[in-house]
Length: 280
Ligand SMILES: [Zn+2]
Ligand SMILES: [Zn+2]
Image (cartoon, rainbow, N blue to C red; front, side, top):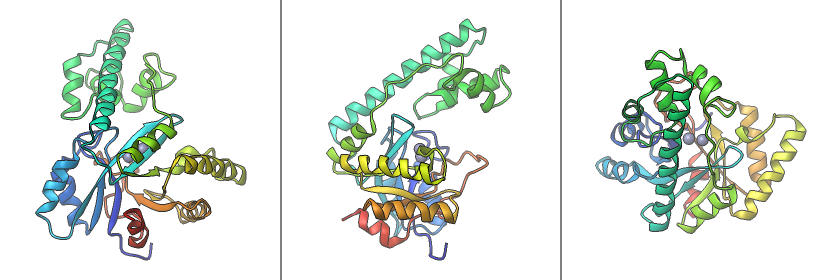
């Protein structure tokens, strides 16, 4: 990219499935030259206040309250400038959290029937201050010697076709967009290519229809800039954003877990002029 990256609108802390605390994340972002960042934990706003407090002591770094809501069909809806203290939002998020805890317990008991004895407290310890979920069960399975890798844990047991999969009730994309809207936020569709069949003409056409529908529900932005997107992907998404009058957003989706495709904060993001449209 030919412009300086000063904005990263997709970051995770240890309050969801990221590794860094809000403090460490904010400091890393500052060190990497960022000026505007958004903490967008999955279905959780617990890391926002802390991030804002840390940034108060850092000149020239703005933290935008954000969230990444999981909705049906693997659509992740990002929300920016949300009133994260809104009581209705907090009630909905705590219901999600409870649902996640009970599904995790259910999965543990199914695994037990399959001869895999994972202790709830061990799973919980892997989650730290975040909400327990399948990644933590996978870690417990690896440390117990039941599987060798995350992939094996998910492919055989925890994934959608796995032996111990427990389904979850998810919001529709419409509900997610409307929830963000109801707390004064601006919504954007995360990592759009995850919602596409491929990059051929027909897949682009179908995805364009999806965007038109989401736009009707109130979608405002599209995550055009995302880790490892090629120039071709960026320009294809930019075209779709322009066509549907959506703001181009972007970020690294940094988790700090050292995944093979990980990109550090500050290496990918939208141009400042696109970012400024979000706040208007
Ligand atoms: Zn996501
Ligand atoms: Zn994310």
